[in-house]
Image (cartoon, rainbow, N blue to C red):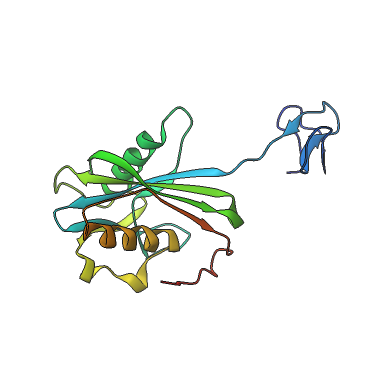
Length: 185
């Protein structure tokens, strides 16, 4: 950040009085700019013994498979954001959304919330940010073509939890920089 969002003046980066970490502070009006993590919300849509995945048409990771998810917008709940992203990316309607994975992606200051959801019907298709949308069984998931470690984690949790029928909230902290995620399972 180089300029203040309020007055357009230059900013400095230092610890404000009474704080414990550096912030961008306007040199003119004194506004302290708090840059906080971005929230990503999405769904793990399930239909019978299959999960719905989308093939990405946008960066990052064009051509790789993912769950329908994206950045939360102002004025919506995380559950609403997850359902909206599923509709936008897969033209799919979902119901019975239950928070399933909460992942802190520390190096990029993001928090990802994936909701386990029931796919309402088979009327789905690729949206503007996808090139393909398909249902996959556990054996047919393109594991080597998944876009992100967070998606791989959510799918592994789901297929393991499905064996017992219990779907607890999974909380994961990823400390490794993007592109260096190591699959430890």
